[in-house]
Structure formats: structure tokens, C-alpha cells
Length: 210
Length: 284
Image (tube, rainbow over all chains, first blue to last red; front, side, top):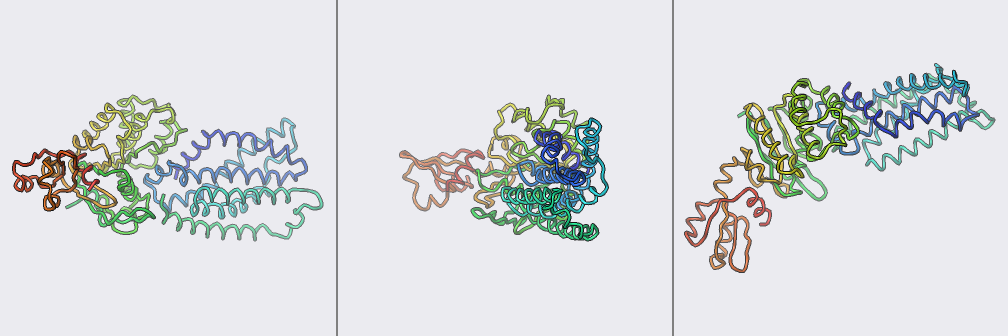
């Protein structure tokens, strides 16, 4: 697993697209979301960064010819899928540190007043990411890369719209309606979805032609 | 007998192609050339051996073990080289090496560095900056640096110039001096195999035509040249493939002695090369 993580992080660092996303996504969000609740802005940053890193590395072993390399190395398919699911927590930890430092610098420089560490934001981001990957990962394994990408984009857009609406502080914002949902329930749902999705992905990947 | 690779009744069905219950075995200490025209099923077979494709039937045993059940253990002892570079182009040789090395329990860094020097590869170079030959050498260095007992190669010499090809063949020949190691080598450049292979397995349209020691193949197969007057229906049955011209015919036989007895000095018989065997068998 250390080998794949090393590979994934090396590839993420060497990808120009990922570097551009890592550097400019936070300022972009700050620019377009003046009316957002700071806590939800922080939550969105955590979810988007973790999601981008997880899905990008997930697709390395499913698309392109380099998929033959990793699948020819001494690792079995179950391990590969389990790693993919566990790696989201590693990417999440990286994101918490990276976004924390980035947002802290923004605060120090007085460019904006933003949260750079918020426990509630972190607690809400964890089940959201789990639910998100529970849907996206099996689609990448089951469908052709092009179809999976379309599903992924639809989910990403839906999530962006919902998040923007939740974080909107005006009367029409959905934030006030979400107060009824307890974190424990959402986490329980996320956990069930995550485990079912993991089992489904193991089954799909085991029987898949690379 | 303990085989290093056993393929038994292996089957894989696609929409337009079927790998049809193929079987062959490879003993330790030998090089097996896997030949066949494009689309014959060579890469499919190799992908099935590497468990990149899921088989529809049959059995693959590597080092005497089921290749799916003991996938990790088996792959730890396999070195692979594919027909083109599948490594990540944006990574440097060193980064890619350290990624791959962490998967193998027997990775030998000093051996890898030795190959780097021998192949004149710069460890700091990004893989995308390497020429095709250099990429192939890098793949070969990786395949040979973890004490693999079976090297599986899919068209490793295709697209390489003769100097590079000879270098690679020399390296493979030196690998095989350790009698426990074997090489399974698919190619359509049959002259490479005439130099180094011990066994030849010929596949065509998803079926194994033969799997025999190279010397037996080259001893029994011959090119028969003669006039059209002797090419009656009975004579045709004796040949695997025939090429007719206005002045005569050339045909492939797999039994030179029988052909000599049948036609005497009315025909000229020459030893067939692996290329002749492949071309005439495909044409039949």
C-alpha cells in the first residue's frame, strides 16, 4: 500500500493540472463566495480537495495504459480496491493540513477572514466524502471511462450546487433546513454506504478485465 | 515434471475473437518463444497469464501455483516487459523505480543501479524524455532487478533497431545461464527467437498450432520447391501452405523425410525458417 500511495502522491505532484487546482481553487472559491458562511466554505474546500485527489488517483489504475503496470505488480485486486477506499482518509488528512496552512496565511495577510481549522467543518466533511466516493468509485470500475466521467461530472455539479445553496446565508438558503439532521445519523448512513460500496467495488474489480 | 508455467485449456471469449482452449508448458531454465501473426492471441494470452484479463475457462499455474489464488506470491517472482512503455511518463526513472521497488520483497537496488550504468540511463531523467529503446531498457532493468524466476515479455523487441535488439537478446541469454529462470517471450520478429529460444509455441487465430523444442521444429519443417505438374490433389494434402506461381510452387511441409520419399528429386527441399513456418501456416 505504501508503494501505491507513493506513486499516487508522486503523480499528483507531477501533474500540472493538479498543481493549478491546488494553488488556485481556494482563491477562486473565496472570490466567488463572499456571502458564504465561513464554516461551509471551509467544508467545501475540504470536500473538493479530498475528492479531486481521491478520484484522480483512483482513475490511474483504470484508464490509460499505465493501468497494466500496477496490475502486473505483486498486489492482488482486493488489496488495490481496499487501498483506494482507505486512501481517501489519507488525502483528507493532507487536505486538512494543506488547506489549514493556506487559509491561515490568507488570514495572517488579512486578505480575507476565513476559518483555517474548524472541527465541525471537518466532522461534516468526513461523511460527505464517504458518501461521495461510495457512489463515484463503483461507477469508475463498472463503466467505460467516458461514461464514468459523465456520471462523475453530474455528481460533482449536483454537489457543487447543493453546497452553494446550503452555504448561502440568505432566506432561500437550505442551511436552516439541515439543522434537523443529526451528524450521527448522517455518519451512520455514510458508513453503511461506504462499506456496501467497498464490497461492491471489490466484487466488480475482481471480475473485471483490465 | 515441475513446470515454471503451465497453461491448460485456456479460454477467453471476446465479441470478435476467441482464445480457444490453448495449452502449453514451460520448464525451468529455458526460453520459450511465443510466435504468431498480429491478432493471433499472443497479447491476450500474456494478459491472461498476468491476470489482467479474466479467463473464461482453463487453468494457469505458475511455479506450480494457481495464478489467481496465489496472485501476489506468483507476481513477486515474475518480471514483465510489455510491448511499449506503460510506466508513468511524468515520473523520473528514480521515482518510478522507488514506486515499483516497494512492491517486491526481493528488490535488489544494487542490481538495478548496475543495469542503469550498463544501459547508460540517467536516473534523474523523466520517462517521457527517453527514446523507445531507452524505455525498453528501463523496463528490462526493472524486470531483472527483483530476482524474478520467470520473465514474461510481450513483443519487447518490436520497433527497436537491430543493435538494441541484439543487446536485449544478449542480456536475456545471460539471464538464462541461471538454470532456475525461464523466459516467455512473444514476438513476431522470428529471427530473434532463432538466436535464443529453446522452445517455440506458435499460435494462430486463437489456437495453438504447435508447442515444440525449436530444434525439432527447424529439423522437421521444410520449404519444398517444385514444378506445378506434381501438384495434384494428393500432393496438396501433404503441405501446410502452398504458394503457386506461373512456373512452379513453394510449399511448407512439417515432415521433410516423408516429402523426400514421396517426391524424390522432382522437388528441392530446404530447411524452413520460423518466419517461413509462420507465413505458410497463416496462409493455408
